[in-house]
Length: 234
Image 1 (tube, one colour):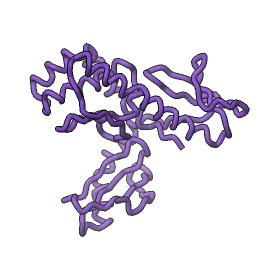
Image 2 (image 1 turned 135 degrees about the vertical axis):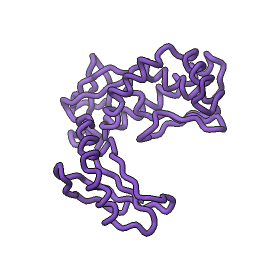
Image 3 (image 1 turned 90 degrees about the vertical axis):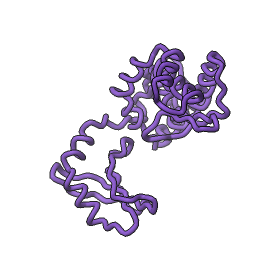
Image 4 (image 1 turned 60 degrees about the vertical axis):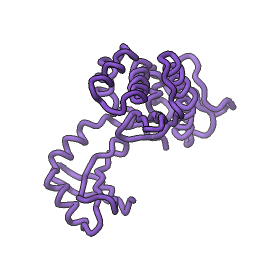
C-alpha cells in the first residue's frame, strides 16, 4: 500500500521516494521503479521512515547508478515515436480526422484533441497487445502440441511472462512492442513451463526445441527491455 511520495536529497542530488507499507514484509526493502524512476521503499509493520531514509542514504551510490542506467522516458505525443513488433513509427496528430488511431505509411495517426494523444496511443498499444499476443501464443502452442488453459495480459514490472500450475499463462502486454523474435522466445519460455515448472536442464532443452531465438532474445531484453517500461501513457 502506497503511503506517500516525497523528494529526498542524497549525496548525488535529489530522488523521488515512493513509500509503501506492507504487513507481509519482514524487513525494509528498496528498489527502483523502471517506469517512474522513483525509489520505492517498503516498510514492514513497526518500521519508521527514518529507518528507510537511513537505508536510502547508505546505498545512495547504488541508487544513483541504477537511475543513471534507466533509458529516458518515451514521449507519446505528436512527433514522438512508438514501437510495434520492433518497428518504429512516428506519432502524427491529426486533429480534424475522425478515424481514432491508425497505422498508415509508417506513421501512427491519432485524431482528437492534442491533450489526449498520449492516452489514446496508450489505449491503442494495449488493444494491439490484446489482439496480437494471445493469437501468437495459441498458434505456437498448437504447433508444439501444448495446451494452456488460459492466456492473460498484465502490466508487470519485473516479469515478461509467467505460467501457473493450473496451466494459465500470463504475458506482459508491453511485449507487443518488442521484436517478433523476442515475443516468440518469451512465449516459448512460458509454454515450456507447461511441461517443466522449473528452470532445470530439461526445461531449457525444451525451450531450445520450441524457439531458435533464445540467445538473440535474451540479449535484446538485456539491452533494451528496460526501455519498454519507460512508456507511460498519460
